[in-house]
Length: 383
Image (cartoon, rainbow, N blue to C red; front, top):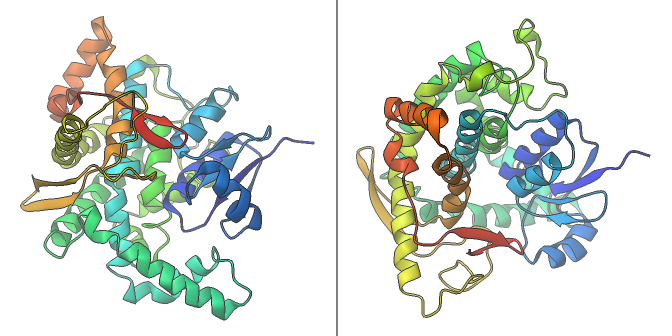
C-alpha cells in the first residue's frame, strides 16, 4: 500500500493552493480533507495549537503546519523529482520569489476577494460553506457569511484602504504583464522545472486571483499565459505540451531566463519599501523588550498567532502612504534568500551582485534585523 500524506485545507485557501500544487508536481500520494473534518476540528487543531489551514500529516504521523516547512520536509525525504536547483543563484532567486508571492502578494489577493465581495458573494459563500461544520446547507451558508465578514475585516490591517487600492491594482496589473511575457516563453519561473518560486507564487495567484470571479476575469483577459501557468501547476508531470521541445530541468550554468529579470526588478521596487519598514519596526519592538531570550514569542500582545505583528508601520509606496500591521513572517521568509546570498563568495557572489545591480535589488538584499526570527512549535520566536 502506498504511503499517503493528508492535507487539511480548502479549495479557496491561499496557502492550501501552494502545497497542493507541490504535491501534485512531486507525484506524492495524498488525500485532501476539508477543514470541517471532525478529526481536524478536534485532534489536529489541538496538536497544532492554532486554528489554521493548511495542516499536513505525513505517513508516519508527523504534523506540519507551515507550507514552506511542508515542502522542506518532503524535499529532504523524496529525492526525485528535485525542485531545488543545483545552482546557488537559481536557489536564491527561487527562495526570494517564493517569499514575495507568499507574503507581499497576499494583501493584493485579499483585496481582490473582499473589496469585490458583492460581485462574487454567491461564489464565495458556497466556497466557505464547504469548510463549515453544520448539519444543513442553509446552516452552512449562514455560518459561511459570518466567517466571510471576519476575513473581510482583515483588510485594514493588511493596508487595503480606499486610498491605497488604486495603486495596489495598478501594481498588480504591472506584475501580470511581466508574468504574461515570461510565461509566453517559459513553462515555469526558472525554465523547464518548477521550483519554490512557482509554489510560492501559486499561493496568491491560484486560489484567490485565478478562481475568484472578478480577478479571474482580469487574469484570463489580460494575462492568459499566467492563467495557463496556474493550470499547468495543478497538472501531474513536468512536461507541458505548450513547450514540448524544452528539456525538463533547470538551465545550465546557473543561468536565469532573461524574462525573469524584469520580474525581479518589480519585486525589489514594490516589496523593498515595506520590507524595510517591517525590519525597522521589528528592531524597535525588540529594543522595547524587557527580555529578548532565545525562544521569545514574536508577537505584540503575546498571543500565539500564525501571522503576528509587532506594531503598525507607515511608509511611502508608489504615490501613496501605506499603513498596515507589520509582518514579521515576511522577514522570516525573506531571511532564507538573504542568508544564502550572504554566504556566497567568489564568482557566485560577483554574479549575484551584478544581478542585483541590474535589478536595483542591492539595498533590499542587504536588509538585516538585530535578531533573526525562527519558527518553533508553529509560531515565530527569536532565534
